Image (cartoon, rainbow, N blue to C red; front, side):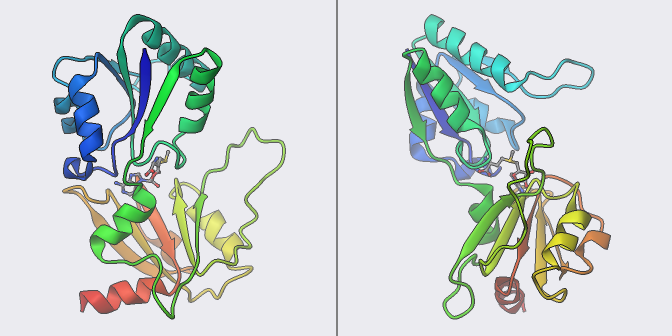
Amino acid sequence: MTVYLVGAGPGDPDLLTLKAVKILNKADVVIYDRLANEKILDHAPQAELIYVGKKAGEHYKNQNEINQILINAAKNYNMVVRLKGGDPFVFGRGGEEMLALLEEGIVVDIIPGVTSAVGVPTSVGLPVTHRGVATSLTIVTGHEDPTKSEKQVKWDFKADTIIILMGVGRLEDNTHELMKYKDPKTPVCVIEQGTMPDQRIITGTLENISQKNINPPALVIIGSVVDIFKKARL
Ligand SMILES: C[S@@+](CC[C@H](N)C(=O)[O-])C[C@H]1O[C@@H](n2cnc3c(N)ncnc32)[C@H](O)[C@@H]1O
């Protein structure tokens, strides 16, 4: 009984790692939530598939319920795969699942995935660091848990490049906060559905990006590296 926490990458099924493919191939059960591309499940032809994501009109499983499903699966199956978009430990709650399993004495193995935070900009030719332009990078959630007693995100980042995940719903508020510390003309690039056939790229500045029509899932990349991307596209 081993649970493999496996990163599924940002969407394009060809961005799965070889190790993930090998493990999926041998899996007895795959527990997954909303995946950018369900073709990834074709790598687990003999596995039972358990969906734990949101479904219209149905109760959405909370993290404790998902942890319990993983624990039960580990007790009943030999090879359990918990498949997660991108990398399991980048805003994926993989750390919480790992700790819950370890507390039950269950063996956990973690297979990293290509995180959307870096993989998506890279795939379009937007370098998140660039010699002489950006030497540091912050990856932040745009949707901090509203039940937290105190906010951890202050938006006064010093890094040259800022990448916001889950940033569509509160883009206006978050860019407003950032403009307290950064030039309103700072370039911004939004990539919707990165690495997927419906990918869209929208560019603007901190002061106007929230006025553009943007739909999730999307990454928001802020900083002078966006100009490198624009130069490369010319
Ligand atoms: C809950 S987080 C999970 C991140 C994931 N663990 C990772 O490493 O990429 C979901 C957010 O990741 C970003 N995201 C994931 N896949 C994406 C894609 N293909 N294109 C753009 N953004 C994506 C979006 O900001 C989305 O709201």
